Image (cartoon, rainbow, N blue to C red):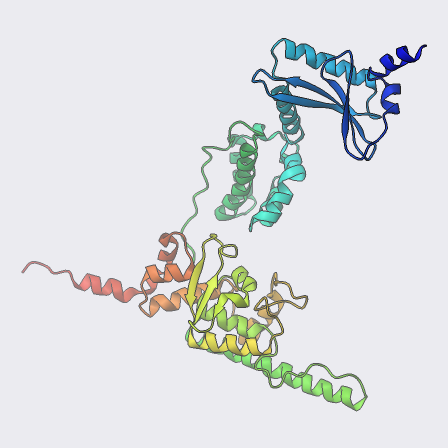
Length: 423
């Protein structure tokens, strides 16, 4: 073969000619002499990639990746380019066709409930949604049988059967509604992502939830016993620390941290006092930062990202709450969270310590969340109007606050007394 024939041959993109292409400081492209638009792009790293370049009907130059040299042979890349050239010639929008193929591939990959959660949704929910962890947990636990079901084949009759079975198992209607809402939320995300065309649970009605909740709040005697138990706990821990350090001192061991002259031995008492006087939710309490406390204006700000309804609210601080925060500020080492755990991170629960305090105070059937009910109930019984209570609690709908209305009977009695019968 003459040098001229070899040169002409090398202008064709073959395995041999592409292998000969040398790297350069900058990327460059080599076009095939025979098939218009068929090219290979050579990177400084040595990576060589085949493309088909063409002009779309609007006059814009576009290209489609055919494959990496080594993963695909030159003849295979050429065959792909020939097929694309024929489609372009016949008027097919190959770029749109490719995008649709990618979309359809993604749809198929994430078609089932389980694959969609595993491949896409779980990481997004955990990173962006406050309730993301609960949503994922509810789906995996309660809808394990649905994991291999295509999402567009989940039907309202299936969910009605689910509701019936869960009621037979003893789950409360409110709990069942919450679980079903988690599934509806996932399917809403799938619709937004274009993985299903319509939401399959549109029209599904939630179960009726009877309004028979008993508002639990502390009686004056219970409140006194709670504060006494908190004080007693502090004294006991201090005495144990003094006794323990005396023992260690006599034996030459390193002494434990001394609580004096600090006001508190740990976070439990200031947490309880602040909650009793603000009605703040437990999750909000765990997330408070020192920058959220305005000591000059006696104001606590609950950030939108920490609030249940994602709305910022401001709570005026009672003088006792203000003093408590100042005392805690003087002894804590944290400049970030008001109540950090031992690792400097937000708490996820304080169940053990709270349970011990309640047992010491001989208080039964009183959850941490009931502190919030106690706050609202005491305000209403003191004559504070429901709108103000609603704002302090951060309720989105005042109907939620109306559960406390019966605690102000004197208002109803006064209204009744305004009635007069004709003489």
